[in-house]
Length: 256
Image 1 (tube, one colour):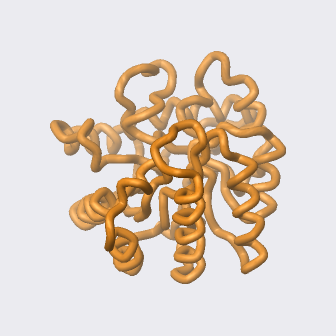
Image 2 (image 1 turned 135 degrees about the vertical axis):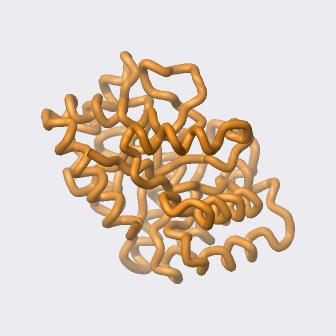
Image 3 (image 1 turned 45 degrees about the vertical axis):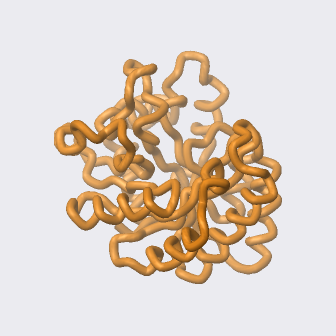
């Protein structure tokens, strides 16, 4: 049994004191590969350095929507340059966020558009963050689809079944994190039940969103097992088959 954690933030300070131990626990839990995802230029460089040191890690490079306002001159050019590095397998995370008021929305849209164009130019998949902005994200994804085929993932998905269905139709994968294990997440599990077998992924979004029974603690890749167990039950398949399915999907999208 192996799993791939398709979205982690191992470069963040929450892991500064025990990063190696976190990776060791992940290996014991059967996590065979991790995608370390950048949220800015410096973060993306740190993710790439992690990938260079650890063969079980690949990197995604981008500027997360809530950090767009912190980007300084040259940061986007750094992302573009990083996108061609050998250990980089995705662009992002990118997207839109109306929940937090950290970056002007027009600025978020500009950066999201840049990421979508960069993904098309490099042939890499993109990673989408959306919070209280699904309609806005879908509008930009439709426009991008008119320019050409899309390859990407809706990360840490919390939207509706209709949103998931349209994203799948547009060419995207749907990734579920620890919220799917929460007692009151029946609606989200119902969405996960309907996602086509060849489009479902799982992630931890470490250090955030720890699944039950670790809720409210720091999340880490080893806890991905709990999300996998929950969604296997939800979809009526064995744990082993669900692990094989999501691992195959992750390899297909990220080419790891």
